[in-house]
Length: 297
Length: 112
Image 1 (cartoon, rainbow over the protein chains, first blue to last red):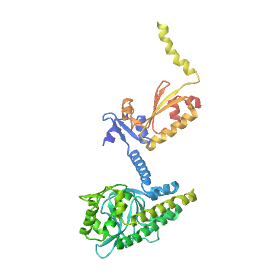
Image 2: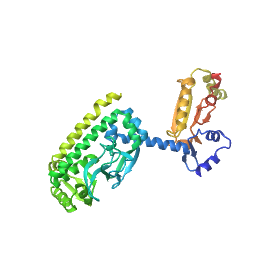
Image 3: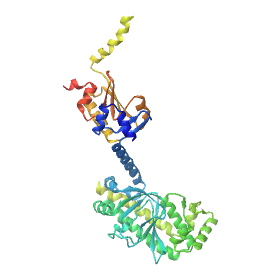
């Protein structure tokens, strides 16, 4: 409506109206309201530019994407869609075909192995360092775990078919994801051992450290019910473990908000699995970047 | 007194006859919108070809400086204003019509 009025206000048959008819104009200056009114095509184009800039910035926020050579990343970019994942959202269910793969940026995703009914146990944690939907990398297009968003935040998603195509075409992406799949498998194995042999307090400390690393934050929201679910324990047990850590002044836990007060102390309180997982993660990370970059260059 | 007053009026004519006439241009654009980007590219090509160093170009982004567009009476973007040498002229659109731009800049005769 505003645009129509503005068009009428321009000199009849003048150069401005002719240029608009030829599609050569981006904006009209509305002198009555001191506003610059963008024409629809220009508005769409500028929105796209802003979106691309956002995705460019976003890539840096996911280590897997950031580790790719620039040319390979540029090829992926048109198929990557920026979105916000919200707490509690289920991305994949076991046995159900995967429609999208996700590259978390500021969010955190739990991989839950399900038993009968609603029972589930956490077997993996994915943050800015990884990807959700790794079974596609191994040639299986259904998920083996339930993936659930544990902390709200931005992520990039990609259609499974497009992902297959990109995976075939980009050797660096392939190498990086194979290594990542191995790291995830190692983490799942370590988690099984940890769940069996280590006390809940030490496991909770490890889990809080891993969560903090992946969210790059010392403070995050967490409900006891959720913690109990991922540890496969009763709420009372989890509460006891959290209280013990709180008494030792390692964390504070109030109204579902956890804050790590003493990181070093928490590391000492956690089981040795934390250092093992993180060390092997870093080793994989270092290998990921060097040799393949040269191949594509 | 009157001959002194007249003198400055003749000066520009004398300069115009010289080789180094500086053309001062101002291009109003709307950020990275397609026609704006094209106008910049087209104008830069024209300046490179016909004006070389003999020009000054200021690009005003009306999305960043809307007050400039208001104050200077701009109606649409992209829009090119030739400020000097007089007479001033305006061309609107993405400047892909080279002949029209050259005519407005007073360069058409040189081309022919």
